Length: 125
Ligand code: SF4
Image (cartoon, rainbow, N blue to C red):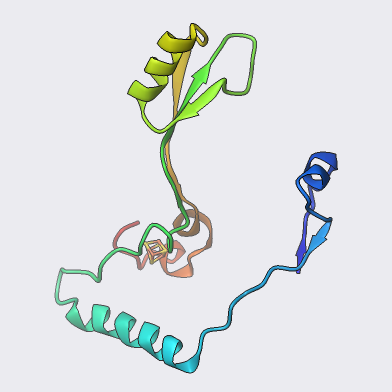
């Protein structure tokens, strides 16, 4: 059950209710064992200074770096692009925007939630 604390009219327009039920698929026992065995094999393969592979972007809750086209007197972006060149091209094509602001990507799970990383055990942090 998710309680949307910042719920308001714009969320209602998108079809969201103040309280939403989110389906969480339950793994079968076979899927759970497959996952656990894969994790154990990563750790067994890690030897000496070679750590297990870094978690996937999905596991790290990674968001990509983005490039926002900005304009004086406005706080929000006119356009958000995947690359600086795409943002510059958009400015040239639309004759709008004054500068491009880089918004670095984040690994939200690593930074705020993963106990392994927060305790200093993760070699990638
Ligand atoms: S901090 Fe946690 S989630 Fe991030 S890479 Fe390390 S183990 Fe994975």
